[in-house]
Length: 86
Image 1 (cartoon, rainbow, N blue to C red):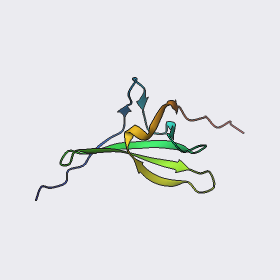
Image 2 (image 1 turned 60 degrees about the horizontal axis):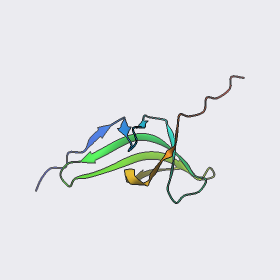
Image 3 (image 1 turned 30 degrees about the vertical axis):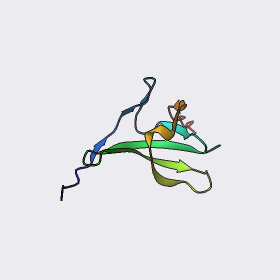
């Protein structure tokens, strides 16, 4: 049985050239109003399979999630908002 060797990276280039980096926000196709933050991209070369680890969703109940890269809407990608100093 082959050993599972997952490879994790902290940048991911979307079609069209946009690059996701940790903390960047994006939305998923088919999910209105939910925003996610990129954590990492994970690849399993044994299968092969790639998925994006992210955190977010509904503001009332954010959670950790893994999604296929094709679900990311590249037009929605942006850097996180900076918090104002008090």
